Image (cartoon, rainbow, N blue to C red):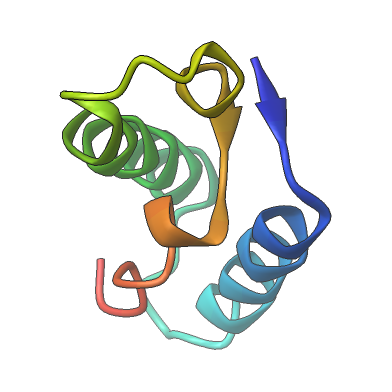
Amino acid sequence: MYITKEALEKTIFLMKNAKKHQNFGNGRYVNNLINNIEEFHILNVENQNDYERIDTITIDDIKDLENI
């Protein structure tokens, strides 16, 4: 599994912003973030035959995760 630079930067941004919330639970947040990225990724590549895209997390898999 690979992650694009843009997707990695967005993931780091989300984690840094999450720490600002009063009820932030590091392990729980990271677990939920990864699970949500995986779910969006599966939906985004569901009907694709491009194996490089299937094997790569992109910004499209992360862009709607601001409010998890």
